[in-house]
Length: 380
Image (tube, rainbow, N blue to C red):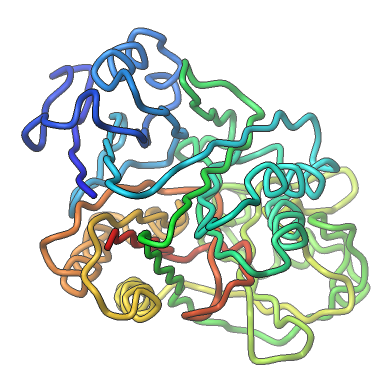
C-alpha cells in the first residue's frame, strides 16, 4: 500500500506534498474540500486525468486535514495504491430523512461479499438521519463488518453539502467504499472529551432525530435557558453545547449535535436519533480534554489495528470541536501524530457527524457527534 497527496487552493493551484509516483497505478482517490471547489468540474477533471484508473470519491467539509495542518478552503487529494486489496463503491441518492435507514441497507447489501473487511461511508451532511443510516448498515452487515466515516460539512453555514464520485460534487448523495481481502487491516477509534453539566433530563417527546420535549417542557425553550446569551446565535451556537444521551441506562453515552431549530413548534433537529424515554445531559467544552480525546481515539484505533503502524490515517473530527478550540485546534492533530508516529499519511476533514464503533475490536458502529474519529489502514 502506497499513498501520496496533492493540495489545491485558488491562490496556488495544485501543489504536491510528495513525489507523484502513483498516477495510473492508484485505485482510490479521497477528496476532502470546500464545497464550491468540489462542484467545479475543472478541479475534479484534473484529479481524474492525473489518476485515470482510480475511483474518485470525496465530500465537502468544515475544514480539511492533511498531516498536522488544517485548511479552510482547499481540496486535499489523497491517492492510494493497494497491492492486494480490492475496492468497490456503492452510491445512493437520498430524497428525505425518512429514507435514511433504507439507504443504509441498500449500500451495505450492494457491498456484502466474500472477504469484505471494512466499509468507509461518506454521506450527505444535512438531509440525512445519520443514526438511521448506520442502523440500516448494521442490520445488513449483522454487525459483522466494521464501518467508519462521516457526514459531509459546509464550514459553519449548514446550507449545502456535496459528495463526489467520479465527477463534480452533487447534493443528496451517500456513498460507501468496500475494502476486500485478507491483507487489508483496519483499525477504528473515536472519543470526545466534553464535560457534562446540569441535571439529567428525560426525553418525553421525540420522533427519531427531532426532539420536542424534555421533562414535558418544550425542548427549545429549555435549551435556550441553558444557553443564555448564546441562544441568540442558534443553531450555530448549539455546536458549543451538545447533548449527551445515556443509552439504555448503560454506561455508554452518545453525543448529539443540533442541526437546526424550529421556533414555531419549539423543536430541535439533531444529526442522529434522540430516543424517547432516554435521559440527556447538556455538555460544555474543556479544550485540554478534547486534545486528550483525540489522543485516546488514536490509541484506540492503534489497539484495534493490533498496534502495527498504519500506512494511512483518515481523521474525521466534528466542526463543533474546531469552533471551540479555535487557534488551538491543531493541538488535537499533534496529539494524533504523536501517537501514530511519522510513517502514516494523514488526511481527513471536519464534519457534521462521525461514524465509528465505540470500542476497539467492536464491529457494531454508531453515529457520533463532537468526537475525533480515526480510521487506520495497513496492508500486510
